[in-house]
Image (tube, rainbow, N blue to C red; front, top):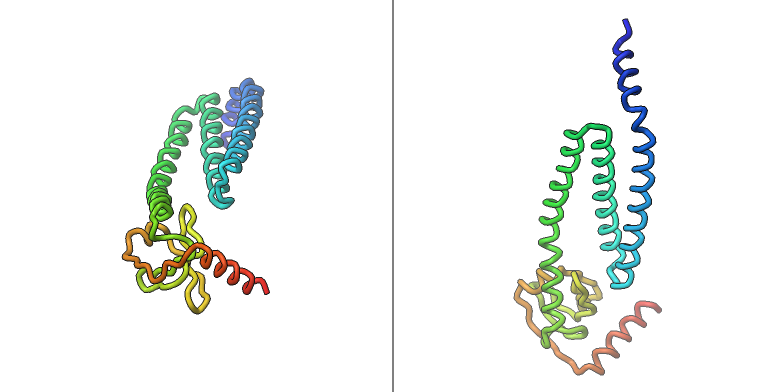
Length: 189
């Protein structure tokens, strides 16, 4: 009774000559992944991508690269079916990203349209749905509106763009800047 130990021993002997090749592939793959992630990190800093979004993109890129490396190592071991199955998981990840990116792209495009709209700007008092207040910031994904009771409401740009919004007050630029500065100073004190 060897409980399959002979088969395991034979498998180890069969894979032993491939171990240096696999270690080399792992080492080179890890270096390539490190270089790609470093370049991605620096590139995202240059284009001023928000930290949270940059972290998501780096994590996603890291997962994809490690899956590709693992699939290649499995292929080197002769486990082609497992490698193909693992590579198929990239398709599932891609579909999930495409589904989630739909909202992201919608928010970014809406943010661009809102930023170009002459009737929607920082400092304007607007009403979006049931929310009425002063626009504090408009960025790629969100619009921040400060209400009269000093609550900060953060809305996705796609919601603002799709919802009916109206201008309550459109002050001149000098008074807008002074109002925002006064609010910031009051918050700090």
